[in-house]
Length: 141
Length: 141
DNA sequence: TTCTTATTAAAGAATAATTCTCATTAAGGA
DNA sequence: TCCTTAATGAGAATTATTCTTTAATAAGAA
Ligand SMILES: [Mn+2]
Ligand SMILES: [Mn+2]
Ligand SMILES: [Zn+2]
Ligand SMILES: [Zn+2]
Image 1 (cartoon, rainbow over the protein chains, first blue to last red):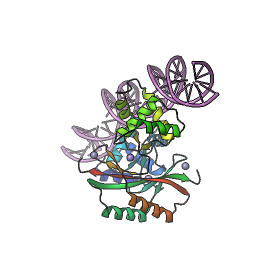
Image 2 (cartoon, each protein chain N blue to C red):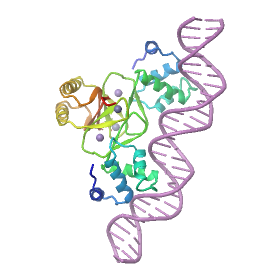
Image 3 (cartoon, helix red, strand yellow):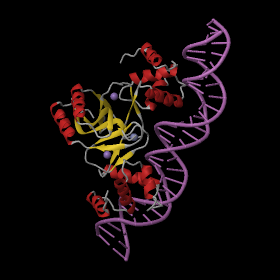
Image 4 (cartoon, rainbow over the protein chains, first blue to last red):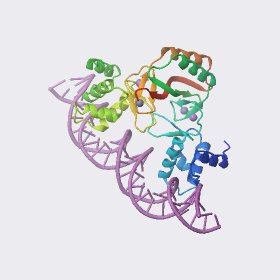
């Protein structure tokens, strides 16, 4: 994936966030690493460029990015958080064999869901968004 | 919810698991506590009846129950695992305001999904099950 | 450009959830 | 009832994450 530093700096500006080398390199790492990296994956990747970045900083920045809607958390049944640089609504394929989580985009499905919940309201609950956790196995796994 | 100890003992038998007071009381707790308890919720609840149960035992038993399909894990974006005594496939309403997770059962939706994925196969992936994470806010929250 | 100040980062200690180790106990079959 | 083996208790260890303090720095003002 081609990642432009200038775009990243822009995103921070738009959110009124100070542009720090740490923030830039962390968001860049999330875009470049795929498969929904953990904080640790990100730290490992970054240490090449910024050997002195503090782990606390990485966690702090990740929180900031999530709060500002620049990244999303991806839930798993392990006890490590994983992060997603793709903020447009999409779904996930979870592998039962390994810890691969692949993106799954399906407009037709989204329309189906949208329609279903337009008719069938959930009593006492206002839907913000819906993410499908699709569990299964990849042929390659 | 009415929980019969005899039913619980039966479930263990069927899975070839030894029936221990700890296992019984933990599964009982999961059935009685609602809102998808954490290990800690369960420990707190149990300590009334079994003051000496070890936390390690609770985690161990929870793993065993999950492995044997007697309970399920429920993923959240917090770093505590939550457990579900309802093993039939169903979906979840996640509250954005608090940490309430409510069950959402919808046969019509399940049919819709089943149909959708019967036609539209995902290249290189075999679906085992699908859980919707429906995020939003409850009126009461 | 330099100055000022609030924000952010570094370092490492602290915490919280979970796992591990090992001695002891007890379930369930013989 | 006895034996074998799996399960539990106790507490130490580990892991992911958060917090605290101090030092550094980004960005707006002068
Ligand atoms: Mn994704
Ligand atoms: Mn549930
Ligand atoms: Zn896999
Ligand atoms: Zn709520």
